[in-house]
Length: 454
Ligand code: PXG
Image 1 (cartoon, rainbow, N blue to C red):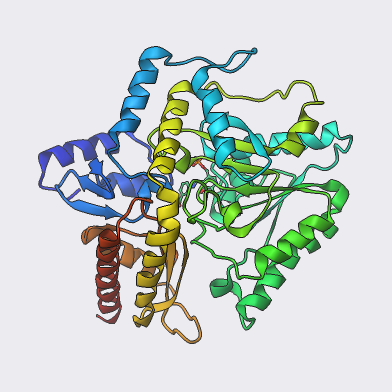
Image 2: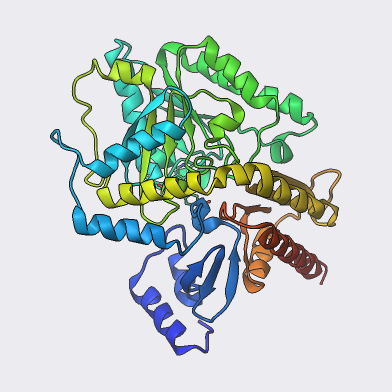
C-alpha cells in the first residue's frame, strides 16, 4: 500500500482485513490494496486520491445511461417508500414488475413477449438451463438436455453460468463444467483463424456447431447458447459469414437458440439487442447489466411466445429467487428504459457516437503495437502484437497488463483480456469524450511500446 492519503490507507486496510474481492488474488490484493472509487458523474469516475478517470468500460459493461442520474435514484427512493419488497411467488405480483415486463416486450424482438426476472445475468442463465430442460420434458423429449456453448464465451459465475461459459481458468476451479454442457470453437479470427480468411474461418467456426450436434445426437441437444458478440472473452466480433451459417444450422435441427444479451442488450450495438443487429431470432435472451444501467442488480430471461406456449402446458416451473423481479430494481429498470427511449440514446449510438468511435478507434491501426482494431456499436477491441503481418504476440511479456496499468495511471479505464485491450464506454459518451478516450489510448500505447523497448 503506497498511498500517502490516510483516508485511502484506512479503506485499503479494511479491504485487507475484511474483504474478499471477486476474480482477485486475495493475497496479492492485500499487499497492493485496491484503488478506491468514491464517486462518479457522466462517463467519469473519481478515486480517493482525487484522480478523475474516463470510464471506458461503463463499470463492468453496464452503466448505459452514465453515472449520477438523479431520476434513477428518485425512482428507487419512491419505490422503497411505497413497496420496498414483495415477492412474485404464490400467485402475487406488484405494479413495477408487471409494467417492466410489458416495456421490455415493447423493445425486444418480435414474439419475445414474456420475462422471467432474476437478480443477475448468471441467475438468468441458470434459469435458462432449467427452463430449456423443462421445456423439452413437457414436449416428451426429456433426453434433450445437452446445452452447446462456446469456448471463451462468458455466461456467469454460478455453477451453471461458469459451466456454460468457456473459460478454462474458471473450469479448473471447482470441477466444471457440470455434465450436460459441451463447448465448440469460438469465431475469433484474429487469434485462431490461422491461414484462413475471416470469411472462411467464420464458416469453419459455425460448422463446429453442426458437427457437435451430430456428435452428441440431435435427440440429446436442448439448446445452443451464444453471445451475439463475446464481451468478456475480448470483444470477439464474428466474421460476416458466421451468424448466417449458424442460422442455417439452427433451422435444420430442432434445438432452441439462446442469445446471451447481458452485454449486447439495451443499446450497446446501436440496436436494442445484439439479436436485432445480427437478425438472430432467438427463443430466449438472457439480460442484465444495461437493464438497470447497473444502478441496482437485476437480470432476467426473455422468452419467445412459442416457448411460453409449451411451458404453459407444463404445470409449475419449480424455480425462482427471493429477489426475482424485486420492486425497487424493477422501478429503476423502468426509469432506465424510459431514459434510453425518451433521450433516443440507442438511436444516437447507432447514428452518431458508434460511427464516430469506430472511425476514431481505427485511426490507432497505424500504431506499431496494434495488429487489429475492431468494433461494433460502442464496443471496441485493440489487438497488441509484436508483428502486424503475422499477428505474432509478444510472448510472456504481459503486454495487455502493462498497457492497462498505463491507462489507469493516465486517467483511462481500458480493460485487458490477455493482449487484447477492450472498451465499452457508457452509451451517453459524447464525441468530445470519445476524442479524449482515443487520445489517452494512443498515449498509453506509446508508453507501452517504450516500456517494451526500454
Ligand atoms: N452473460 C454475459 C454475456 C456476461 O457478460 C454474465 C452473463 C453474468 O452476469 P452477472 O450479472 O451474473 O455477472 C455476464 C457478466 C469481465 C466480466 O471481466 C464480465 C462479466 C462479469 C464479470 C466480469 O468482463 N459479465
